[in-house]
Image 1: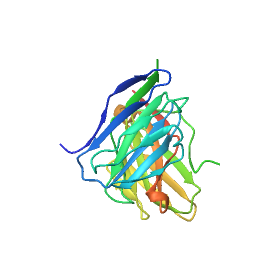
Image 2: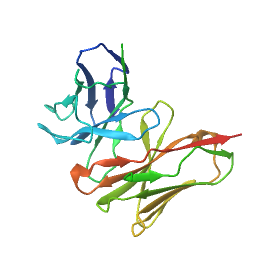
Image 3: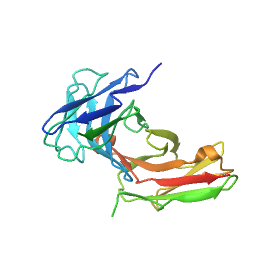
Image 4: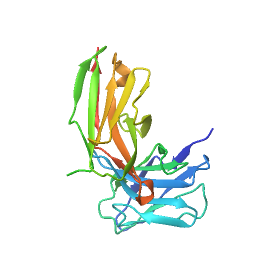
Length: 112
Length: 111
């Protein structure tokens, strides 16, 4: 079954800790994206990657880092510099620039 | 001003009603347009793309007016299962085809 898999579903971060959210897709999509959603708000773009070994900052990249070493994988690290990390994190991918994006089922991150 | 603005919600309608959502966008570099639906605590799912000529998918009709920078979604014969938040989304021609999301309009269909 083709799709986007995010893990874990729930994650708790301690003060000063970095945590990494996983996103894997087997759709053979070139472009991948990370969004953050806060309650009652729209999705905001954190980082995106249009091709392996290349990625760009989105609107709210501070406190986050990514890598794109393989086409299938686009992990997001929430660093200790991100002071308000509690949110719903969504990974998406798409086949072409003007095609719709398809989302994984998300990771909920909370602070311990 | 937000780049994508939607009707404030929530919309509370009875089963069988027709409901219309409106959306305006401000960036003239907007190239592609979509409606997504998002259920509570779930990921957004594509409902339909929106084409310049307008398009229909069963009970759902989407319209685009590029001159007015306006997008609409019409739902006919509402079902209980249509209850969700509807997101208006535009894709920019530049910036890697980045998606800009409206804040969403909540729909609640009652028996």
